[in-house]
Amino acid sequence: MLNSNEKKEMLRDAANPRRREAFRNTKDASALPTFDDYLRFLDKVHAAFTHAARDVQKSHGTDFKL
Image 1: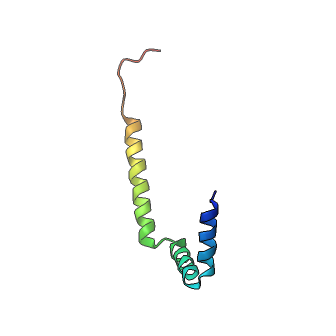
Image 2: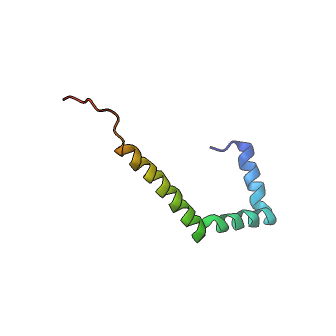
Image 3: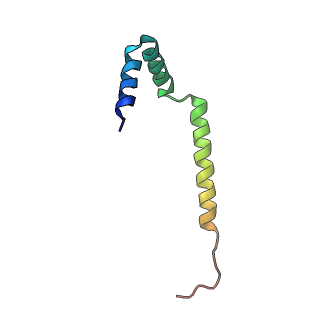
């Protein structure tokens, strides 16, 4: 939750046309990632899952008895 000072600051920013426009432009620009951003994201996901799959395949012992 925002405290009263933070709420007042947000209202002042909204009342200032220049600040209001800056917030809108930032929101619009970050709404959709670029194709390159998406490919970087997929590369990171692939790397993480590849690493996890290798860890699952490793044997953690040899003398298991039921």
